[in-house]
Image (cartoon, rainbow over all chains, first blue to last red; front, side, top):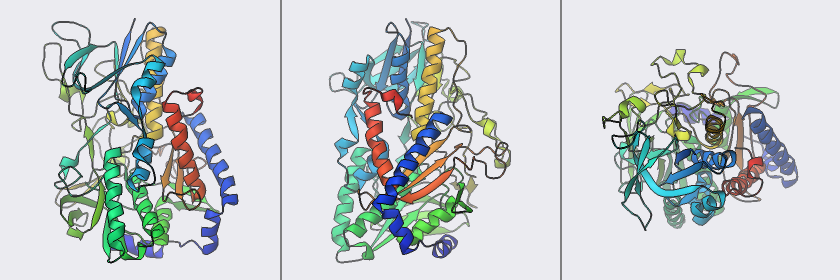
Amino acid sequence: MDTTNARISNAPLPTREELRRRRNPFLQLFRFIGTSWTMWRLAQKHH
Amino acid sequence: MARVVVLGAGVSGHTAALYLRKLLPDEHEVVVVNPKPTYNWIPSNIWVGVGRMAPEKVVFDLAPVYKKAGVTFVQAKAFALWPEGDEDDARPAVEVEHTSAARDGETEKLRYDYVINATGPKLNFGATPGLGPDGGHTVSVCTPDHASEASARLSALKDVLRTKKQTVVIGVGHGTCTCEGAAFEYTFNVEHELREAGVRDNADIVYLTNENELGDFGVGGMQFEQNGYRTTSQLWTESLFRERGVKAITGAAVTSIEPGVIHYDQLDGSHNDLEYDFAMLLPPFKGVDWKAYSSSGEDITGDMFAPSGFLKVDADYTAKPYEEWTAKDWPRTYQSPAYPNVFAVGIAFAPPHQISKPRKTPDGVPVAPSPPRTGMPSGTMGKVVAKSIADMITKGATEPTHSASMSEMAAACVASAGHGMRTGTAAAMTMSPVVPDWERYPETGRDLKATRGEIGLSGHWVKRMLHTLFIYKAKGRPGWTWIPE
């Protein structure tokens, strides 16, 4: 347990800029399209 | 005329039934046996469990869907399999007990030409004393009813948190549990809800898991390339825990639960107590309670089923150490080696072994995440078995014509970490294959081009879209086959 929480406390912490990017609706719209396309293609190719 | 009986109307069974009906000419009969009258889109139960989605949004009645599709629906639970027939009739049969109000308790034998076991898991709360909402001391999100109860308890917790500190424990309630991803989702959805309610500062949130390290998810973790680096799902997950201020206990096997205290063992041999005010712990799974008999009535359950209660299929079940496991051990056609007209898909098939490395405490308590067999792979198995059976019936194929090994197929997992069209977030992950193939991909076990992870608002939108799309598909609406499994 201690090792896990020590690792968590040393894990990369996203910057404010990164957190804003993750919530920016305009940027996220592109990621939404990208992720959906990736998943669609994956399902078509591997199933 | 052939009759195909599908046992279970979860993702794999329901998918198999819809494809069978689509592929088979009308003179053949497709029968679905399910104890409940409804279909449940389980991935969205998480949102029911935090009060963000009404329970009726994750279920729908099966009868009208099957009536429209031309599938015979029998609301019943199977309790015996007669793969050789019986003394009265040489045709194989499945014995069921009806559960509908009109025929409750009635039993009958349904004769079949092919049977697909898609009965899913029995939620084995009894494996850990004190686990679960029915007679135990923890909540669950495994069913819509469980999730509704969890939501009510969470609502009460928010009120308490306005005046005093509370400890919230979310995770798995046994060393052999699977579905760590669902526990992960509920952890971060609860964290999100408490933050939105303005009471997060008073909540100490602990994720309690049998995973040896965070980001394992029962699939041995993942490696992927991101921003010019190769990183691991462990580091990626730890980063989210740090960002959201959630603590974690890994490599834990919960042994018993009392009101307010969880007892668990860890791999270092320690016996630990964890006090809690609110706990959601998922149960381990086992096969549903039923038996198999030879034509003379001899119990052959042990021959057809693994000790876990899941049906043995075309996997390599030879006992061997972790270091000797290979991708080839995993089944491809899901056909029973003993009876070629018996198949098992989804959670109901017996995996040859875990995917993550199994471990034990010095006292012999297993800490071994079971392999996930839900969602995308589950639907794919249902589809390929339906195609094989359709070919066996219509083309006279003597063996299954389609295959889908978990060591070849990809999976997408969108783990919600908070609900909200503007404030939500989710970790969207893809991996290929689900079971690492170290011969084909010696570096990481998986195809790095298809194994990815991303956190953000878009992930929430994707999960919400999948909710709508998969319920549309499950209802067999126009164009449903265009929506992939």
